[in-house]
Each structure stands twice: as structure tokens, then as C-alpha cells.
Length: 282
Image 1 (cartoon, rainbow, N blue to C red):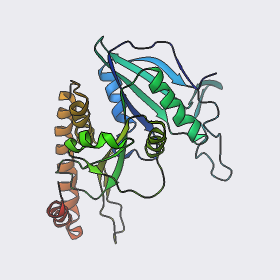
Image 2 (image 1 turned 30 degrees about the horizontal axis):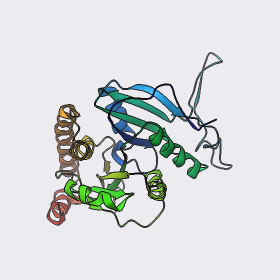
Image 3 (image 1 turned 120 degrees about the vertical axis):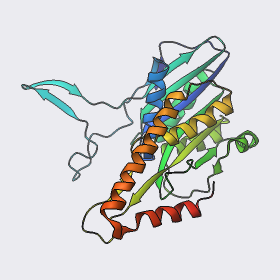
């Protein structure tokens, strides 16, 4: 049995795939939240899935409930069990379509898992794949988000250079995006990852209380990434909702930072943020 199965094969002339995961590199919910937002906005419908069997562990001894699935009972009766999900959704017309993939980063058999994704892309005749990721960092929330990029085929780079991205020199533990990029490189599949850098600040250093600020759903980073996707693929995905959410997020951050600066003047919040802005290279 194939790891990926489909109940429908889109017939659009051009098909692209946008991928995200509930995963490690998910700052600002860029990897998990953005695909869900797009699926909902475009009323994309499910066309397939990857069978979860063999990709996940039930428990790690000594870690209590680190990876155990959540279960819920009501009056003694089981009503819900959380399971790993790896699903393909689709929205489009006869000319152009987008496959949205949203999954859970696997624990086991990563090569088989990524090969299932690449096989799915070939089956659906996907022209190019884009994976989303997010990384927290000390970057100014008042500026446009930095977007980092990795890619699987060298001939892709001239197109990507037009996107105002930073090409990654990362060396460290692999995310699902990075592993998939390497497998795509080996198999001749066009895949790129776009990582947004999401603001996170720790103002609690040397203080008794906690003043950690990080953006859980960074709509500004989502918007920056999707502007690049629209441009690269000549798509017309409506970003007006994200633009409105971005403006609202900026107001919320202004208020939150102002509150911390006012109640804790000894932290030098405004000086710190001004320094970040001065050092920021767009």
C-alpha cells in the first residue's frame, strides 16, 4: 500500500504545493498556522493523506506525556483521541491550482516520509513545492520580517534572487523542511523552504518576574512569505485579510511593549528595541 493515497487528482494545467507541519521550526505558527489559514480562506477540500502508520512513537519512557496522544472522556466514555494527521487539500480551477499539505513532523522513518511527499508531488504533477517554517529571534517587530530561503535545484536560484530573501548558511539539527529539501535535491524535484524570522524578546534577565514576549501567530511574517509565493508563482492569492491582521498585530505589539516599558522602566525596553532597529539590515 502506498504511503500517500488520493481520492481525487486535480487536472489544472499548473499545480503548486504549499507545505506546513506542526513541527519544531514553527515560530509564529508559520508552518502550522499559515497553511490552515489558507485552507480555510480558499475553502480547500481534502483530496488525500499520508498513512501515519510507522512514522510516530506512542511514548518515551521517563517523559510522562511528551509525545503521547491526547484522549478525552466524558462520563467515562471516550469521545476524542488526537491522532497524527498528514493531509492534502486542494483549491483551484482548470488553469491553476494549489495543493495545501498540513501534517505532523514524523518521529520515525523520515526518509520514507519525505519520499512519500515527493512521490505525491509527482503523482499530482506539481510544478514546484514550497515548505514554510518559522524561527524566533531578536528582531525588531516594527520592521518587515526577514525571510530566509533554501532550495533543492541550483537552476532555481536566479528566480529566488528576485524575492528579497537571505539564502541560508545554517548548520545544525535538521527540521522536516531541511530534510525534505535534501531529498528533493537528490531526486531532481524543485523544492524551496521559506523561513520567517519572528520577534521574541526576554526582558526578564536579572529580574524576579517573567517578561518574555513572543508572537504566537505572526501575521506579518505570514504576509511577507505569501507575498513572495504570489510573486514567484504568479498567483493571485488574496492577502487583504492578512494585511488587516498584520496591522492589528502591530497595534497589539505597540500596546504590549508600551505596557512593559511603563511598568518596568529599569529594563530599558525602548533603548533595547531602538538598538535592534538601528542594527537591523533589511
